[in-house]
Image 1 (cartoon, rainbow, N blue to C red):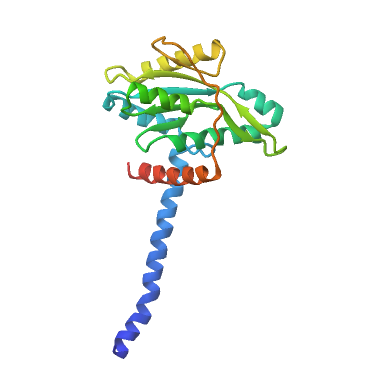
Image 2: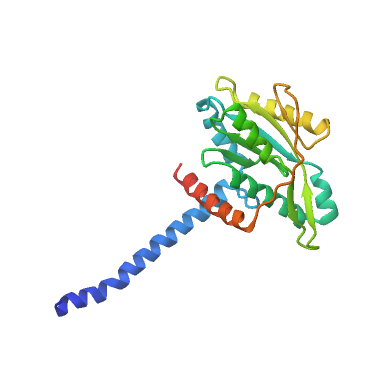
Amino acid sequence: MTDMALESLFIGTPFVFLFMLGSWQQVSAIRALTKRAYYDPLSKVFNRQTFIGRLKRALPKSRTGLLLLMDVDHFKRINDQYGHAAGDRCIEAIGHRLNWHLRLEDLAGRIGGEEFAVFLADVSEEHGKTVAVRLGQPVSFTDPSAKEHLTVTLSVGAVWAQSDVSFEKQLVAADDALYVAKSLGRAQLRFADGSEAIALSSQSELTSEDYAGVERRTNSKIELAARQ
């Protein structure tokens, strides 16, 4: 290699490094902006505005989708008795569960203080019910101040998606089913068609390995959202 070639290599290498560093920083910045724009910071699922927007686009395309509204039972008691930090941990735990069990093509959002919405795209009736029951199981988390292990139950309202029905009407139908679940004992899954209630009483927890998987899946969803 000639002296001129060596000199060019010596001069050019720092610029290549700086270019690669700048590209990596740009990707990181885009990911951070996407998180803030589209995602709820506690649960790491879509915020209300993003979820509604994605739902409007997904419903007409889905032939057999299932829309779920989920509400934490007695959430106010958690905040009142253990403090808002414990309530935050509860919201985080629910977000972890949703990100762990849902596919990239599914939607999940935090649409209120302790209320979540999920849309399962193109699922059979059997599979949709199985996933709905799995998502609605009691959630365990730890009170950060007392290190106490706490568990909350969830009530879930569900409606099968219809491409010829407006998303507003389908949201209302799911909300009505959720109201029935809350009114008739909580900790249950109710469908808008009036079918028999499904009890949600088994406890399910995530391991440390599961949480690592959650982080990977969440990052994949964020990158996908940035491209859409």
